[in-house]
Length: 109
Ligand code: FES
Image 1 (cartoon, rainbow, N blue to C red):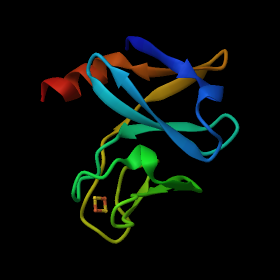
Image 2 (image 1 turned 180 degrees about the vertical axis):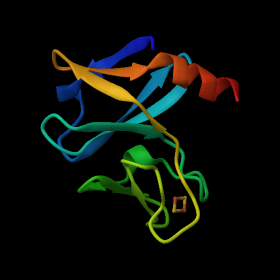
Image 3 (image 1 turned 120 degrees about the vertical axis):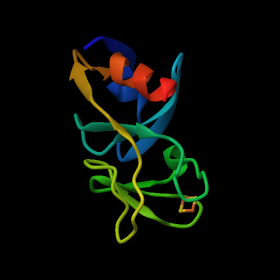
Image 4 (image 1 turned 90 degrees about the vertical axis):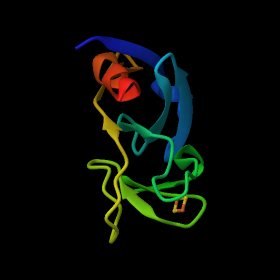
């Protein structure tokens, strides 16, 4: 794996989200706890809503456009046959790192 440093964990509001632009496209980071962060596609598969502007609750995010709820651990929509792509990440010395190889593979698809 090649890890890309995206930001400091404190750059993401607690129980909030932040959109990060990378060379491979935009990624939404969701901070669900003091040291718990999830990375996923920022685009809702329903009609393209910006998930980074949604409401973060528990380990889920609610899309700001039509209230579809996505589980951030799996990417699966609650009660719907839709899914967002999630990305592996790790926290190291207060920094959020994402798996760059998988991000590149996604942008090439
Ligand atoms: S665009 Fe996200 S629920 Fe419709």
